Picture 1: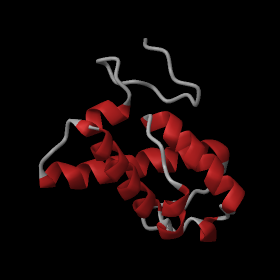
Picture 2: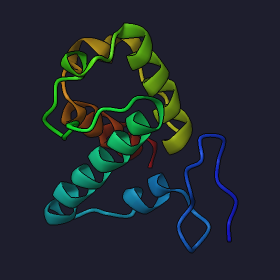
Picture 3: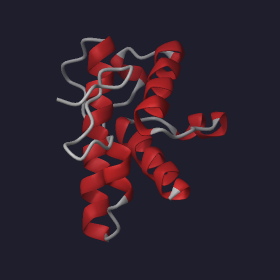
Picture 4: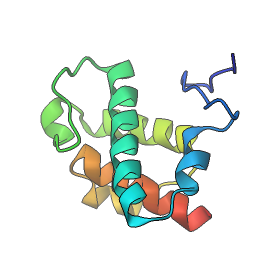
Length: 112
């Protein structure tokens, strides 16, 4: 079994973490699937810190009890998990898990 990263995220069987797999997706159909996959992974990351049973891709982050400090903690975990950097300027547009997933995918595409 491959070793998890610092946040317990498991690499895939090829030894790559999810961002490497997501970067290889290019068609429009896979972009929807990639966004849904990233949203699920973000929900899992949130679930590791807080017990929020009703969190979905369309859940508003702050209405789920995630204050700005918890959201920043989540952002750091996402940066580590996907090996990307998120900008402070993007924070104003992050209202839902799906918004965050879209931002992650944009950063992954920019790095490829």
